[in-house]
Amino acid sequence: DSCVSLCASPSAQGLFHRAIIQSPSSFAMTRSQIVEITEEFALLADAGSTSLADMQRLSVEEVLRVQLDCWFSAQHGCCPGWRSSIGVLPEDLPEPKRSPTGLFCWPGFGVGFPLPVAVIDGILLSEQPLHAFARGAAANLSIIVGCNRDEAAFRPQPQDTLGVGAKNFGNRIEIVHRMMWEMA
Image (cartoon, rainbow, N blue to C red; front, side, top):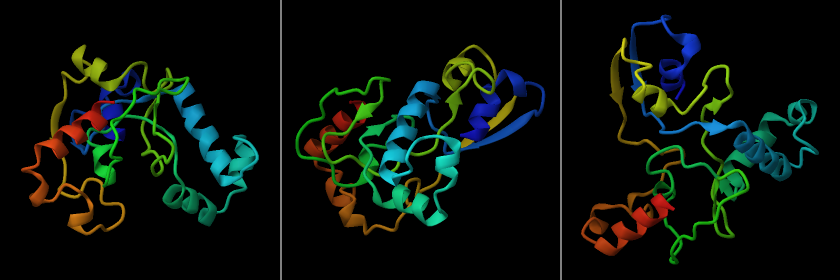
């Protein structure tokens, strides 16, 4: 994402001529969305507040515990496939529930920590990277875009628990269900 952000950033224009963008996400978040995610993190971490002082008091172990073991309700939709990559999805269909800042809200149970993404802060990014690319922000760059086989493998998972193994590719209902969650 940092490479995507730099390629789209007006302040980085002319700093480099080539880029390799590995596993790019599609969108950046707004400041208000980042505040919302930070408030939920502070609550789950029992940090007291979102102030820099309170967040810095958290130990590395506390931060990792929240990132790996807590369930967040507000999620961005920045990475293609992020919702359907969590493994087994709820049986019911997704509802178009949004937070006050426009983030997708998981029904009840939530999911793991939101992946880090760039912020439209008016300094590094003044708009969504894809909008900047469409306007020609990276037209002067030679770019290679790539990804890897294990994009979301934060924790090893047996293939059959992911719900996307070879046995399920023939199941059109499963594919439609995953697509509906992805687009919600």
